[in-house]
Image (cartoon, rainbow, N blue to C red):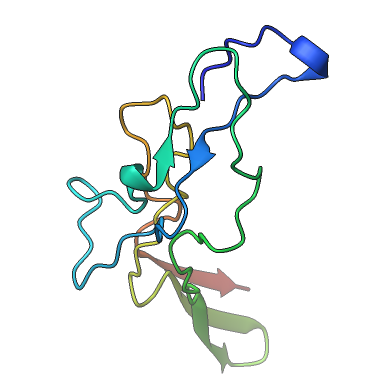
Length: 135
């Protein structure tokens, strides 16, 4: 969050207070990154001016979005024509299942978009074909 401590005791960060018993992460059946927040803003509070918050730097109970892998596939067919001519056809597929992987949510408590993500961290599906003739 925004730091009003001014580097007091070598502190370059100010953290919010964690509300006891609050889950912190919201659960969704269908997550819409343009509308939904991944983190529950009510699970943290501003500790007030010139006070340190009790939230840890990395909370092990709060995790970001699950990350699926993307599969890249390349196939080719090579045909020899006569003794000196070689024909090769190749197809390359990047992110074949076209999975969307979102970036981590905003973790700045002072930000208006705290807990939201809207950025895709991987590339969409790409297909490339090639043909080569060696003689």
